[in-house]
Amino acid sequence: MTARIRPATGADAAAIAAVYRPYVTDSVISFETEPPDAAEMARRMAARPAKPWLVAERDQAVVGYAYASAHRERAAYRWAADVSVYLAAAERSRGTGRALYAQLFELLKDLGYVAAYAGIALPNPASVGLHESMGFGLVGVYRGVGHKFGRWHDVGWWQLALADPRPDDPAEPRPWKEG
Ligand SMILES: CC(C)(COP(=O)(O)OP(=O)(O)OC[C@H]1O[C@@H](n2cnc3c(N)ncnc32)[C@H](O)[C@@H]1OP(=O)(O)O)[C@@H](O)C(=O)NCCC(=O)NCCS
Image (tube, rainbow, N blue to C red):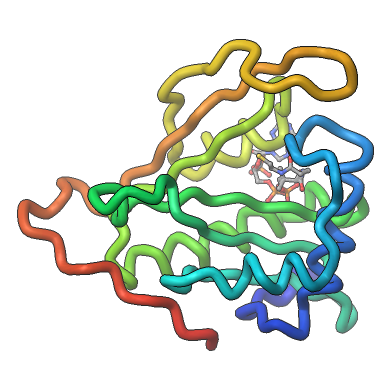
């Protein structure tokens, strides 16, 4: 059985924070050190201009999510989105990461984004495998860019073209409207 993918709403913030929490507290997959609570997650989901947030549901429970955020704040970067995906441990290796990302990239293309970027703390074979299986290529590696749990960690950056070639005169990306 595949998970059901749907747009996230503010009501999902607590469940999303719960999926994310162990990656903050127990791993270097996230470089955060304090897990965001539901209110902080809701604040991130409400960032403007709005970008897509999707959840995966199984048996009416949120078991994963994927979202896009600004790659950088300065204006000329506004067609570039960072993307990320997190699943509850039991949901891994069931096709849910691929399903979330496939819908996320369709939405980003429709909204007028031209490229997606992903920063992956290394090593993370599952994440590298997912991104490369979806067409991402390695850009380069920031060596020792983060320090967590007493060690320095590398971050690899991967990119995926959403428009190829990029348009010469791109339309403004449109804000995402849930659903
Ligand atoms: C990374 C993650 C989202 C992948 O999602 P997933 O649902 O487990 O992956 P899928 O089952 O959709 O697999 C899609 C592809 O990813 C690759 N992949 C998935 N797990 C893999 C693993 N353990 N090793 C290598 N490649 C893997 C494969 O190419 C796979 O395609 P295939 O099934 O046809 O071989 C998931 O493992 C996860 O939540 N990991 C912890 C959080 C995390 O690392 N998030 C990314 C932060 S950068």
